[in-house]
Image 1 (cartoon, rainbow, N blue to C red):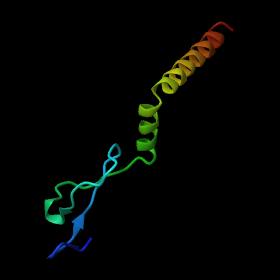
Image 2: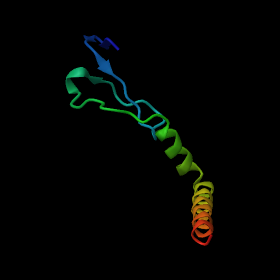
Image 3: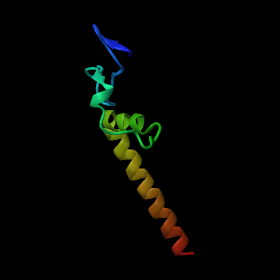
Length: 77
């Protein structure tokens, strides 16, 4: 964005993963940090887990059980 109302300059509009609405625009002079790296799709995974807690717990228990069974099978060969 190159202006905010009558004021010219560079402005950024941000929005968090858990927010439904955009944040208030900020001037480039207000930016303190910089993005070093991003991990794609992590926000979507965390959003799915928070919205489907029971399914996520069942998935984790299933994975833990599968790993336990495989370890038992390999160690008792």
